[in-house]
Length: 323
Ligand code: FAD
Image 1 (cartoon, rainbow, N blue to C red):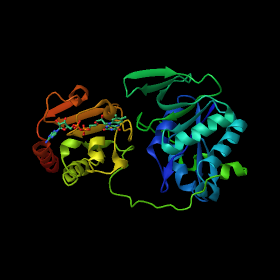
Image 2 (cartoon, rainbow, N blue to C red):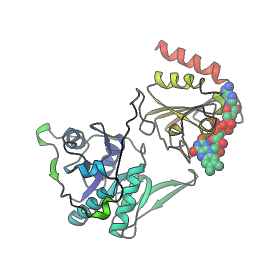
Image 3 (tube, helix red, strand yellow):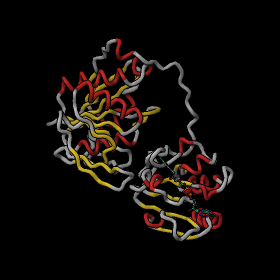
């Protein structure tokens, strides 16, 4: 059956959620094969999960090269793999790295590329949400194979209905790693790992609680964090909150920040400017707390609470704690 290559995003020995989404999507198009890049020994712990979500083959790109150099070697090896396996589609995550690999791959293969795709039909027609979410586009790659990057949190990842017994997981096939010097132009000289907090990663979280300028100060963001922790969610912030120094930029949601699409998005003291909506409007359920009844966020919210967040949030937290 037609093979669909899915480039695996992983961290700390775990497969990232966007990969499980891509495998779920890939099953609509053919038989998914997972492509893993990393240092020696990286593949083993990932195979079980990849099999569970439908990967029949895992191409193992294990080499120190992938840790030491930036994305260019991955694009080079991937291009060779595409040429030798002729897949019907290639899926990557719409993440910083995924998009960079995809761009380089498209050039190497002289192939079209669609980014930030939120859905893909069996015939390769992709759905994209553009212009800050005001336009939905259906597009298709007309040169080469469907090469797409998939926006995280676009669909619910589901394991295969009949999971293979542990003994019959995906077949692991080592990848030939040989790249020329053009793939070694930029080297990682230092890697500082931020201590992993207890909260889920913003773009992968199923609950996001965000604060805006209305939160008033960095100290007051403790209220946002408290609600996020009670709901097992991540914390986000509007640009106004970030620009005011209330919360770090890496948590900014919106056009110039992260795009999130959780099951639940809670907006506290956020007016709902189009640039903010661009990063959160595909959330499944949106709750807004704002003291201004005319705030545009209420046009988007499934549940709106007109009120002072400093009264509403502690009350909500108290109720949640009782349950
Ligand atoms: P405000 O618009 O000031 O809204 C604050 C809200 O808090 C108000 O609605 C107010 O009624 C409410 N409030 C105040 N006190 C309370 C209280 N006690 N209880 C309840 N409610 C209260 N913005 C982003 O967020 N992300 C982006 O990525 C982004 N990118 C941008 C890119 C460009 C090119 C440009 C031009 C702008 C961008 N912006 C972005 C900025 C955007 O236009 C808005 O300025 C910003 O989103 C406003 O943030 P805010 O809603 O927190 O603040």
